[in-house]
Amino acid sequence: MIRKIVQYGHPILRQRCRPVTEVDDALIELVADMLDTMVDANGVGLAAPQVGQDIRLAVVDVSHDLECVSYLKVNGEDANLKSIMPLIFINPEIEFGQAKEFGIEGCLSIRGIRSEVRRPEEIKATLPQLDGSVLVIETDGLLARALQHEIDHLNGVLFVDRLPAVAKVSMKNRLKRLMEQGG
Image (cartoon, rainbow, N blue to C red; front, side, top):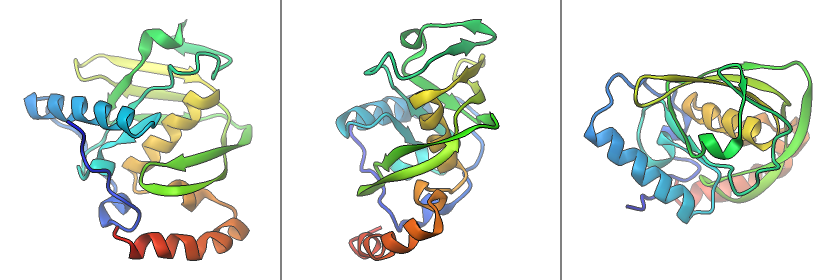
């Protein structure tokens, strides 16, 4: 089922989400709905607060571009991007590499706005799975950026919060209009 995507200005987008403590039928259904919603909206990721759920759950799928990473290690082994997509994870932890890079980002909860965001190039993410297993992913490129973006959502942080001060000022009126349209 396609769920309504919460838009900029809604308070849930600013909350640090609660940990997932139980995987039950309702959570499995939510995951299926989130995947359908992400695909329907042409997104590469979706976090639970974006569909109004205050839990540490997100989905990511960058399999449309198998060249979007220069390397991928899963649990210490070289891996194929397609083998782990879509990524569904709960209660993630993330470590950042030192080098940073700019990349264009948008957000399904902030329609019509895209901007360059500076983020770490490489990450190491510990992603608990619904079945109790854990994937430790080391990567770069679009997958690293998407994971950072979705994990930010679980912490109440939006990509516009990461913009340089000048970009924030120039975007202020556009964001204000979005909020007035119904966050």
